[in-house]
Length: 442
Image (cartoon, rainbow, N blue to C red; front, side):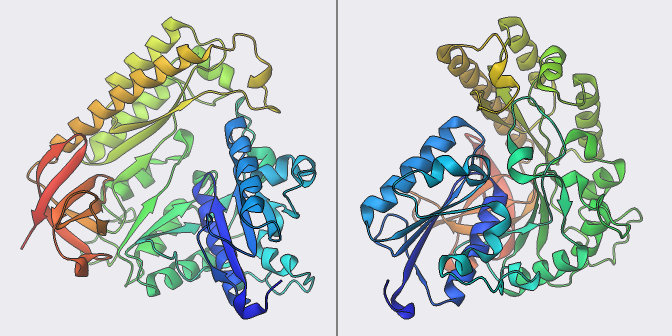
């Protein structure tokens, strides 16, 4: 292997935001040991695939990337980590392309293991924090991982283990580091975000954590990632609606306006019979009541939902129930997933597995519904002045920038490169195909 100063490393990340955060941890480990990061499709001395195992398709993609890495440089060390490495390490270890399999628990010391260093010097809590998300305006803050649920289609509890929360002092320190690096928006992430704090000795929950984070003087804004329906108390709804206040709003509080008006709340099916087969712990009546309460608290809150089409045994009538249910709710967009059997889950053994063309058609219909909902939500914002994190130049639109509103809408506007990474007010003037257009408010 080349000398330390000449070593090149490449990382490919598949799957969730937790993996993206952990890839940043790995990147900083490698850089601290003298590695130079290069694109995954270039020649490197070390290739790392941070894998996902949500579906069989992601498993196949992981294996393809591992073979591709070894083909790029047969002398390179090829490493696989992530949830696939947790669930089926032996299959990966048996691949000729793979040199090292690292389970999730050992990610914080992956660079040390790569060099045969068993000292564990990368294991301290402080060493696991990241200083920045290279090339990104928004940064993720991992506050929780693991899941205690038992959804019939999901392998993640096996891959990530039980629910575990990051102590609040470490969350605050992580946030401070990322703010100091210039990130205007932080996103709280976790496998089961709403369970934050339940396993900690101190009395803390997600509301208390958000209250403390929004009090950080230099923080631009804070966003919540996906959160389960049963884990959204009225106090959190009130806080999001107020933009970052705790239970007693005060216009003088530094946290005012910092908490993004955005919820992403998984539904999975709008049919109670399908929800029961999925082993989801709520029904459509509860979900509808929750969405209605949130929208009543603040009409400009953006609400998204996850939906799975083609779950085993889902009849045409049950799919239409889901479509009608979604159409009736004041949702802003949908993330639509096509069910595919995941070995090791209960759903993979269920009767009534549906053909691909049926699932594809249902996916298309719900994506069309999502586009209509996003457009309608965008049109409801006409004339508003919204704060926007400026992310980058807009593709194929000369002289224009692209940004993200606090309520999760993309905005395109004219502006200069000096605005990238800033939070600026924009007057919204149009919405086309679910994308807002506006101009800088003087």
